[in-house]
Length: 459
Image (cartoon, rainbow, N blue to C red; front, side, top):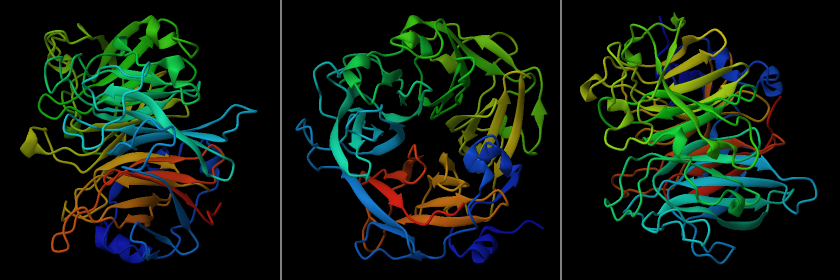
């Protein structure tokens, strides 16, 4: 009989939240990674209440607040924008004053309280309030500088790092020019060079498609890009691949164009209907997108032929591991139009075998309001294991996950954005590991706060 969420947490000392799953959890640890060979333990003990009311951590761990919304940007360009979302850390080149660059998305919409300041040469659309900022950190983790890296975009949610150390930031919207104060169409991917944002500028990578982008992962051998789409209504999003004409890095390589294709799993119109972990589909097909620019019809509505195309609700995280690409469906709800209900799936696509496999299924459990469902951002943890940001209701945690299936709370947000009578806590986002593996960076989405967590990581 499977353990309930509460039973799992009782064993791991994190009562009140957990992840319930079936499947080959080891898939998530990317077995060819050095970190995967030294997994952390089943937790670091109970969370200790933070006297400053920001972030609860296990004893022996500490955090540093690197940046908070509303503070002055060190560049003098304005204030730190709100809605901190996807993020990644990059090593600085030898000889550079910085040790690490931290690139951070701001999922600002038309109603944003603190938009990304518009900077000449880095602003795509004067009507856009989203974008990216970049923090340069020294070898001790101190902030050397903080500046705008991209502005004038919209709903910058997630994205992904490239093997050539740039950040691909994704607009999770399909808004057109003339709506919400925008002067240009939105729904694109932009490339950001954290060391020199003016090198990449504010140029949309239009060949990668115009849709509600979520995340991107790059095949470091073939140079193929994989993209998820988090569409908010039926028909739900698609899983894409982009075949660049000039693969793998270099100035402007992704601007040279290429072919955008959508995944078709023969006989499967909706991935939510697949329930058994280990289920695999051979002979996956890739169908050219008729109009990647979505000039008149959104991509997911376009005609992909009589066999149709494969959809999935809440396609979010996407990352490359070993020889495969992994992508996450955070949840599916039949009441919203999905073919079946689930509380999270992780899929693996093997490009060489053209095989898609369901490797992890989260939930369902007794109470979907409890934390620990709807897995979103995932990264390898210092010392091994996984860190997972939850994106749900109630108390918000960063969870650790071990290969043996044990779940533990690594952090809990304490910033109440509700009222004393009806408290609410902002979700976590952008969890990422420093290049040297000693620091875990994570954002609180609201109020926008970027933390650096260090401590006695095991492994």
